[in-house]
Amino acid sequence: MKRLPIVALIGQTNAGKSSILNRMAHKNIAIVAREEGTTRDNVVATIDDSFILADTAGLKDPNDDFEASIQEQIQDAIESADVILVTLDSSKYFNHRDAKIAKDALRSQKPVFLLLNKCDLAESLPIEEFRALGISPERIYYISATTGQGVASLKEGLSGSLRELRSAAAQVIVPVPRDGGPAERDPKKAIKPSLKVALIGRPNVGKSSLFNALGRKQQAIVSSRQGTTRDVNRVQVKYKGRELEILDTAGLRKPGKREVGIEKFSAIRTLAAIEESDICCLLVDSTEPHSKLDQSLAGQIVEAGKGIIMVVTKSDLLENAEPTNYFGEENVGNRTAADFLIDQLEKDYDFLPYAPVVLTSSETGENVTQLFELALQIDEARHTEIRTADLNKILNEAIVSHPPAGLKNTRPKPKYIVQTDICPPWFVVHGHDLGLLHWSWKRFLERKVREKYPFIGTPIKFSYRSDNNRGEVDK
Image 1 (tube, one colour):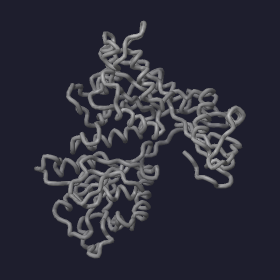
Image 2: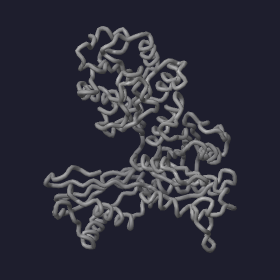
Image 3: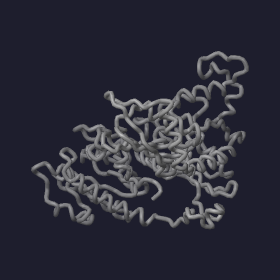
Image 4: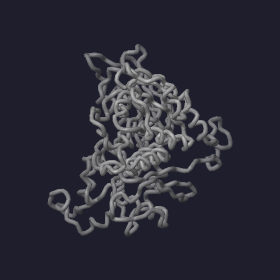
């Protein structure tokens, strides 16, 4: 599978779903409390770089104003997740709600696991009491989120199911030969998969309008009401002979402000769309440019190793705007509100100096086509391969101009660098005591590489491996 698969924890309240997520993620991500219904929003964590684990709010009375109905939540989990983890308290007999959860999950024909949590308690029931739910015995696990018992076995079982999913989803792609074959001499003969571009951003930022403009047809429902798009809409377009697939995602609101039910799994679909895509267009509203959530989304895109374009929407509203309306600054010379906006974005996203910024308007069509051009450029950058000799020349120049300093009065010695991967480009530096390299020198080396190879719109990854095993691989 091109994206990381989604594994959803579902079940009634107080079954320990949040504790299980925290245990599997090795850190406290979800709030854990004795009171039922503590989790009001889905909480997501990437587990071992293998899958996305989503903790959902417990299933409660459908008449509860703060909860979606059982059927809505189960149906959304079935549609959104690749693997479903039905979670029960092993110290209690299952009831009709648990049985319906398991039945609906099994009906999806997706892998379903049964987690019998709290097995460390003396009153845990025997496994025979739960087999009537119909879940395969080999997918029933006694676990304890408190002690960690059974979690390793669960991960191993999940890995097997995920391998089967990847095998089923695998597509045959003809690679470009490296031996000087016909495809290498004529790249046009190499079969290229469609380039997937996801539109990411907050609700009502203009994703659906831009989606329609890019697809030149009314594919998505456009409304001033927030949260109109609930699923991921897709459209295929061709630009300069290349197939592009545009993904329009549901908007993500701040945690605590998301609606229950459908919007919960819309958020998970958005995260899955980031994983599935090659390039993400992060949409920023020109009238509300200051947003911590936008920065958080940018961080998730970078962490996933995807290409990124900063897209400022509703730029037509900037034409007659005074800079003071946005930033409290006086207009200087001939500078416009758009100039001040770009300055502010550069400050807010100083960790993305390589990301191009495009001002667009779905109403006027301004710079919409430019997104296609940038997508092709970023895709080319993501496939860039640098010769080892050229990389080591850059490394040696960096060492001479700024000798690396280490922690604890050490002198790390980088020896050589190689590129090990593309999409995103990944470089491995080998040497002595590299686990003690100061972060500032690592950033300096990345700047040196980008001076020669800009890698427009794409993050690049570095790992540092020491021949004396001092310090783990740094990604």
